[in-house]
Image (tube, rainbow, N blue to C red):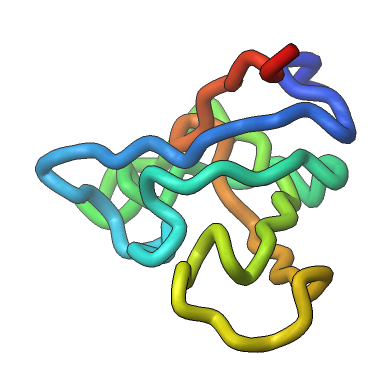
Length: 98
């Protein structure tokens, strides 16, 4: 099991270019969220897209995002959120602001 991230930790989804595999939703790229928990460990879909086995498998984390983080014009309640499963290689830790 990966220990790179812990529940409650602030993370950012990488905004890679070229954009890579579509398994990471485009609307989450460059956005910050918090780790909820470890969802699964699966073969790397980007490697599998090219016919390779995707090994070693990589962790998939459940990350919660505030709706307003994803869509700044969001008009719903401030507590609305969305949970997305994101492969670990797309995540980077973010330092908490003091």
